[in-house]
Image (cartoon, rainbow, N blue to C red; front, top):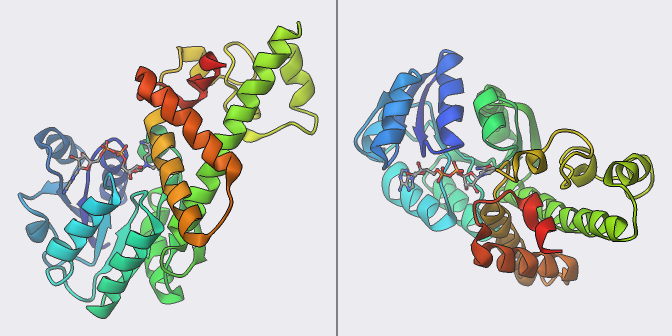
Length: 290
Ligand code: NAD
């Protein structure tokens, strides 16, 4: 079993660190929040006062942090040059592709293997160890990261070189934002045209309009499988997080010179929804604005 530093023990990281400890790894945890550290201790992790202390003597460093500038600061100031050069570095946060590549290059030039390994799946999947990881990095780095990620997820997929995990994540979530809005529009229109929502569900879920937003996460209460719509749109996946991912996607589209008109429109719709006081509402709640 390995000794693993875990940095960022929030909604997602808390459960992920717990699963590494449950699997028998020695987890050295750090977060800025005393409450998060307390929960980590209850879940079998040792806690430390700084990142630099947490990464002493470890075989691996895993991070689950809010954004790219925090990831860059933590790695460039406190991980690279402080963790043993033999340690594998795994950043599981959702951040922009450019920062993921920059941090990966800084790690590589200091002799570390690193992967970007963002996740699909929310807090329940983090706690249950059923996340999907999309991984960017060399074949060798992936081979070393895979057994660690497998303890926290049900699927670990190598997407390509450094930054490819983040690229896969934002392309996937741009598509998710677009088909959720499309699904909401279809249900809203079906109702206005006099169709019962469950009847429309029964038809469309076995027809060509079928998609994940409909059959796994139906935005209408009482239709389809149980979803946040049945729980007054408690997240689930909060609208603020969908907006974060759409902003990252639009930055990447601009950098790559891609015309992503539907993604741009989805970003505008979630921008307005969040600005209207719905940051903590599930992203399927956008149906209420249609
Ligand atoms: P969160 O805000 O609950 O947790 C982030 C944690 O990082 C907090 O505990 C915070 O105290 C800590 N932190 C901030 N700065 C730090 C620093 N400098 N050093 C150490 N700790 C620091 O966020 P979350 O929901 O756990 O999300 C984490 C990441 O996972 C984000 O990048 C998010 O986009 C991504 N993600 C979240 C979900 C979800 O459903 N919540 C799903 C997929 C991906």
